[in-house]
Length: 120
Image (cartoon, rainbow, N blue to C red; front, side):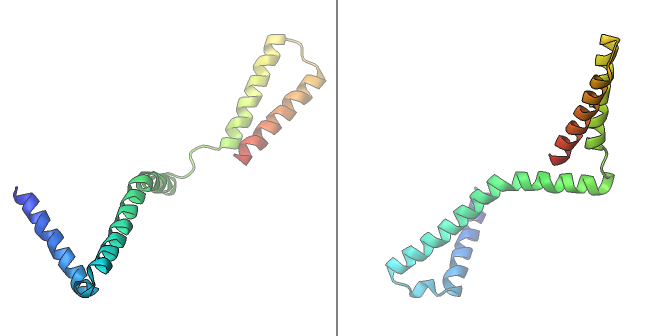
């Protein structure tokens, strides 16, 4: 109960500070209602935005810090090109005979895969 009482006193203090700072105590009841509605709306929207976007922002900052500390650990374009060439070599080994047209197609497929990955 003590924690709840302390929070209640803190909230009362904040209400008092706002009323004195912005002269809310001089408002008519309608003006006071409008003022406190706006304060509640702004606080609610801020809380909702914080809850929705803070986890994504923390993950983004963590990933950025990880990149700054460890550097780029993988070359995505090179990895995709190597994977395409490895698949092409395995396909060629399975067919055991490969024509020059097939080699050209394999090379163009590896280049296309690298360009697609680069665009991502």
